Image 1 (cartoon, rainbow, N blue to C red):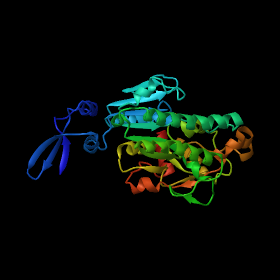
Image 2: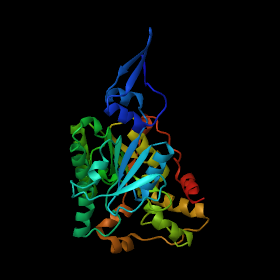
Image 3: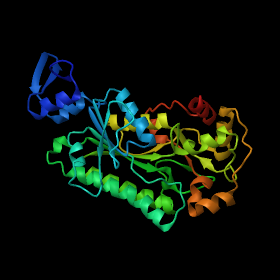
Image 4: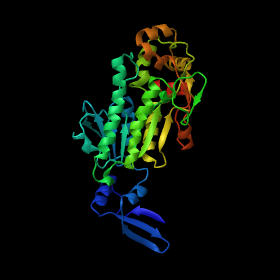
Length: 356
């Protein structure tokens, strides 16, 4: 039996409107011919599987958010809305912005989630900074508070059929703790340090969306590389002037991924009804910190003559220096098993593609 929406080609938003008004018909091709039946949302979901009409991206004005919103627009999503604390307009054409405050569950932003196909959560304070007590509190609350607010807002949508079908929420490979020798997959246990504990709590807040019958996908991000922000936002200017070098010993693992591949993985998670649970968003070939530094220098045609010794990094960042001086070897087993195709798997080739 083959199903499709009757009435010709039109946008997902129009089909949704017809569905909610009881005017959408589901065409069923059977052995004896074609039948038209009035359909419910479950049939609409089957018909439009993989297609996204409206997506809300919380924290979408940031570095990774810009890559994700561009990918959504490129893929033909009808409506992409960024939730931003500042409410400033998105730099990406065809993307609208809405100011939001996670503490205000009566704000206008809550209504934006009504009728969305997917909500993507990218919120979180910058990790690379001195970990004072106040900074740790901000790093933690920025993630837990935002995630909790999004789930609560989705629960406030009275018409269950208008709730998002999927909630794609960020986490990090820091959940596994640090190791020089172990390999980590999605089935590996959580570590015991600050970042691991934070990620466990963060993911627990996101998983509450499951109680709303919303498919929930957790994206454990590695070090995301691309122009315009992230690690390379700091490294590129330094290495461009031949002032860069290895961080610490250089032997620590870096589980990296290009921003382009990370964005594609997030969009796939939103589109594919088969994806659920935790996924490592890292390239299949982790590298050492020295390999990353050397690859960036080579791509720029500059030497890497000025290493940053561990004691100097610790003097500036304190406990937060673990983000740069320690690492873990994380593999994207579930993404690969689901057929995700990385455009960049080798750090040297990735750096060349980014800086060209």
